[in-house]
Amino acid sequence: MLSVDGDADAAVEARIRIGWNKCRQFVALLTNKEISLIMRGRLYRSCVRSSMLHGRETWPVRKENEVVLQWTEMRMVRWMCDVKVKDRVPGKEVRERPGLDDIISVLPKQVALVWACVVKRSQ
Image (cartoon, rainbow, N blue to C red; front, top):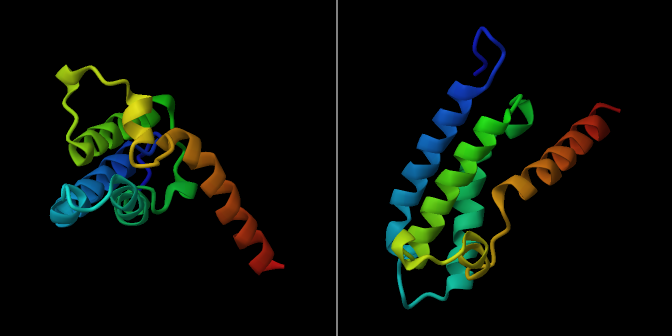
């Protein structure tokens, strides 16, 4: 979903809405204290993050889009870990608890891997 200007703001907003819907769908598991944070992180990574980043290789993402994705993911992870902003826990530490990487560091790796598979199939 590219706009006339060629940016992907609409696509990013749509994927964020889908990510929040997935997060609400799995809220019982993601916030369950009986499940370890590592397992909840794996569930988040495989269901919520993957749905937010689906189709990412076609987006001409700008810095503003990356910031919005990062901000949204941090809100979801803080909710999952039951960490409030007023607790003043650094974001890096919050992401390390469930074993997650920063969403921005994940983006280029996934794009390169997807395009490598596309090129290989076309040959």
